[in-house]
Length: 594
Image 1 (cartoon, rainbow, N blue to C red):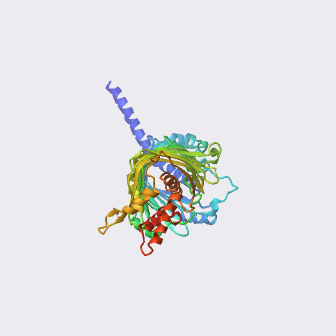
Image 2 (cartoon, rainbow, N blue to C red):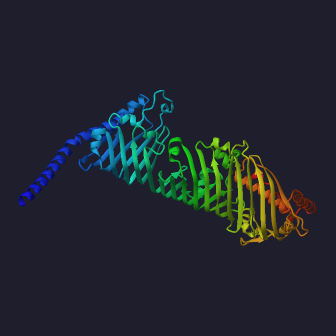
Image 3 (cartoon, one colour):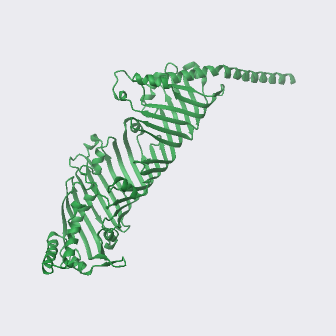
């Protein structure tokens, strides 16, 4: 019995020694073979442009595991310059380095028998990639020669490459743009990348289920910050996540804020530009077609959801306005003219606050109007001409609370094929106190609504690049306007006589009035070419509000006539009515000066 155990133990010991010896032998003898294949693979797939170097290769043959330290993939400058002279150099040049590359489950027998490289997993530790882009005009020309695929470049060495998963740790990426004028750099750090089922064979390039030869690609970027627009603004987000398997792109805590003081921006631009301050909690694309986005520059998704956030817009009338024509620059016209093809079935907005702030050039105060808790849906948002032939209308069904009070509901329709940029907009405003609007009226016009109950407002409008027409119904009562002036202590007080004239001659106290007569605002507004799309909307609706409140041309002329008559009676004294004349002209007839 003892003899039997000795034989068993002896055989096991012999096998262990044989395996260790074979591993030792193969490790040292396979290493040159593996290295030779690696060098040839890199050289053949890059046309000799790149060189692979590393410090050490540890290869466990029977387990199929390997570890490579201090890996470098660098371009050969001499080869690159030669390719430039031959007009064959690529626009993009890469430098790659990583601290460690680990390989798990390499099936080396498959390499010998079938020339197939099968790997269970690859781990990359601290990879750094630098991409330098230099434009070469010859790369824009169409070559008669068929373009060699990546598989064509490696098929004489391997019939296929399959890697079950690839994981990276703290991936840093640097993008360098080189042109004749200047060189710019963009750096993104701490990127996590996970790739599933990467396959390179004769059919993988045409496999529509794969992106960059992979079944799944996950990318996450954290704490990103980038200066834009001449470094006047900072673009930031806490995290950006991409999953090609789930077809989602998620951005959390996005912001675009001024990097310098607002007045510094106005001084540099010397123009009354709109300064945005944007924060968004969550932005997510669903069912995003990454293949068309990366290969065809097409943004196609089932949904874009934007949840939580705020948009503050600021202007300063003390600086000159841009007097260029804004014709053809409505939102849907800008979408139509984009080089990027866009098709998003639905854009869903949820709980977003929008405010507009403007500094007065006369009273040096900031007026503000806010639309809070904006929610709604934009449908069939596209500039795809083939889809627009079936349905040329983009709709936007939105609601918000003005100053957090009155509920405003609006529905837009944008005709993407109309040559004059046709659109419609209709909606309603619920009940609220008119005094809420003093936040914008008092700083900008030096008037206030002393009282007034807005019972409801409804509008139904059509517009083009040149004219807006439609109707507006404004139901209200107890409307009183006060014209303000500063006393010696700087406090505002009402100009009682001026206010009395406006309330008794110019403005109806209610609609319908005490006689039961109801005034409908009938709008026929000719657009001022220098006005933006949204300013044109406001000016059009304001025409309807004025009419509903009784401010028509006949009453204006009556009040101005009183001023002329008073001027004849007292030539040496500027009468109160003369001041009213100036106010009326200033409020209602200054469109071309704004």
